[in-house]
Image 1 (cartoon, helix red, strand yellow):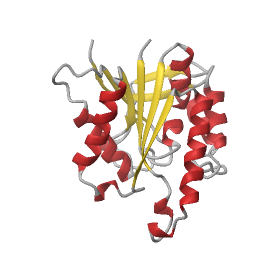
Image 2 (image 1 turned 135 degrees about the vertical axis):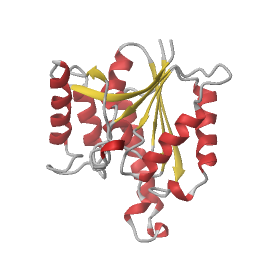
Image 3 (image 1 turned 45 degrees about the horizontal axis):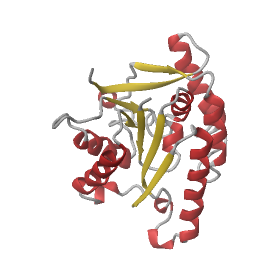
Image 4 (image 1 turned 30 degrees about the horizontal axis):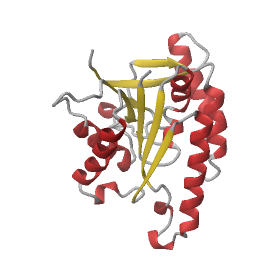
Length: 226
């Protein structure tokens, strides 16, 4: 049994990038946790003070419901400002992550790709690498970056593009990812948006075809210590 921690920027990223893989971990008997650092909604308004707290509460309520569908043992929601992580000191983000690392002691971390278009994703990647630097018998042995549709593929700068080299057959668990994403009423979109159910299935088919299975999720290896 291993401790798995998904570190994500916004509610729904923990599903879009790794939902079916986490469900597979759960089926294998691993303990799975998610840390979502951003509140996930205020950037949709001209002024973040315009947002009714009920909207944030509803989104977080959806996130907790989704966590149960996938099988996360616990979901931890912080309230960093949506799409404004660059307004924070990186050290402050690192300290939040370090506190959860000390609490949960994960063996494996899944997190955002450093080349994503979204600024919050980039800052999470930087913070995770700093918080897990391999000193003082760091317990995290494996770190993987996931693809977040509607962010990863929209960064057209090749040198920072997502180049997966680790694939997980999720043929048996993709249905849980789709069910969970459907539960996110404020985040799911109609086709052909990347966050539509049809697009998520198409993406899983493409990655599956790369490794000769029906459906897969793809990751970029950051570090493996054996």
